[in-house]
Length: 83
Ligand SMILES: [Zn+2]
Image (cartoon, rainbow, N blue to C red; front, side, top):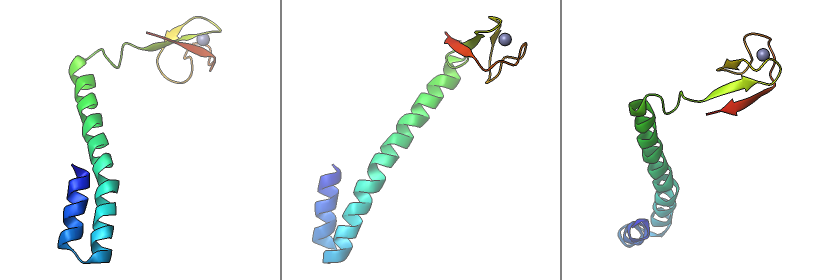
């Protein structure tokens, strides 16, 4: 798909511009695909509700379950993930 675009561009445009345009296609096209995939994943996360929020940490010092970087009960950063 992108290869056909790059060949087409080099036939239409004079040499240096065709090459630059082809490089631009090869650089932008994967980024575009990745952005679209990430947006789709984000939609699933928002639609699923508890999908991204069901995951908590358990404090290793006082075994308190919490969300965030630091245990709100004892202030320890020692934690493990729980799903
Ligand atoms: Zn704690």
